[in-house]
Image (cartoon, rainbow, N blue to C red; front, side, top):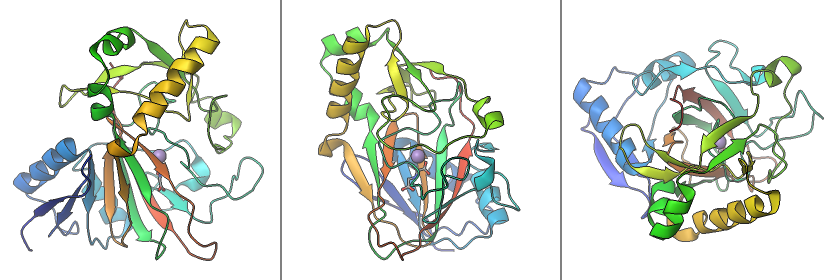
Length: 281
Ligand code: OGA
Ligand code: MN
């Protein structure tokens, strides 16, 4: 096996790892180097993989504890921890129409009391062009706020809900038993990353409902202003997919969005895994 090489992807975030074959167990040193690359780069792309669903799951255990995802209909038939994300997805529990998951800025799982820490997407089939995934570095977004604003935001908490009135795109309908798993939750607006100790703005423009205890108009104005600040180009990296990429991102310090701009006939098939996180604090 060639030695691990790491290459920076974007100026704001993103790192690529070449020379890795996840069909073989990684030695401790290589696993630690990938973990460090992810913590420093926020988004890690492991290139050129060719894995069965079972070996993909086994490899991702090196990064955390995989957990099953809420929508049962998208689970992989053999490996339930894998969610199938496809250009052919439909809103199966809702109107049955085509649905693009994650088309507005968000951080995965923020509607849960304990959101996942990492998300992995394995590009099994990717369009020749289009279908990029965009990311934002939420450490930098926080660091650039004036100290006075940082002080004002420090005590604030935000209500997140699965189907927010502020959402920017449709969300998949849930079956009644799935909806019961995800009551509204409250998270801090500024969180401290449990591994790096760095502060990040914790936002999900698609799932935030309102600042807890604030008047609605003031809450909307604040959230809108913070989203405008956070989504500036200078904080972004845009990933162009190659078949065999495994992209791993840290939801504790990033936001991301999908782009459904590829031709209707093109296929895009991703195998998605999420790993357990901790209560945001
Ligand atoms: C996700 C997601 C983006 C994409 O899987 O959580 O938002 O580009 N995916 O498919
Ligand atoms: Mn997502």
